[in-house]
Image 1 (cartoon, rainbow, N blue to C red):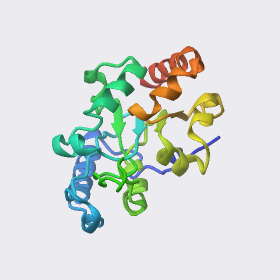
Image 2 (cartoon, one colour; image 1 turned 45 degrees about the vertical axis):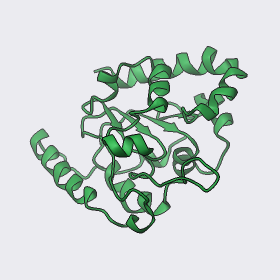
Image 3 (cartoon, rainbow, N blue to C red; image 1 turned 30 degrees about the vertical axis):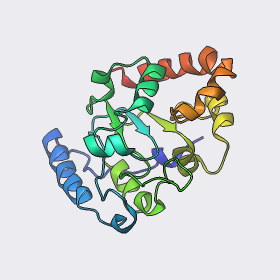
Length: 213
């Protein structure tokens, strides 16, 4: 199966140098940081949080920044990030190495909370405006971690998160579906031994393979 995440043509010319790629990306990121498309619905205002380099081999596609990530500007700088890194058996130094790993949520700014609690869904206009352009700056991707329902549904179409997670082999080698690493999935993980016994070892091996030179 081929996902939307693996179909984007590179924005770079075939013989562009590393310096030219980095310069083009820097100009693009300046444009992105100035985005105000969703400003009217963002309770803390716009602050796009994204990390990438044209050399990245692995893409982590999550949902949207939370309040702590909004305040720090560092993606997955919270309990969910700690849990995700534990699944990956990955240190923060590797996780935040943009030369190897890109982190691009489905919405780049904190969307606020729902009346009954929990973060609001990622505003769809964010992905419509920016996602394909961002992916065009990632020509060397080998693997995408689809973290949670929004990333999975965007890339693969509608489906059930936990079913996809347990059926992860159907999406390799380009994609690896994962549940969102929030406290809400802890009960499911406890009652699903296959996740730790089968999914996690395969996840670590797939990530290791993607990051190898």
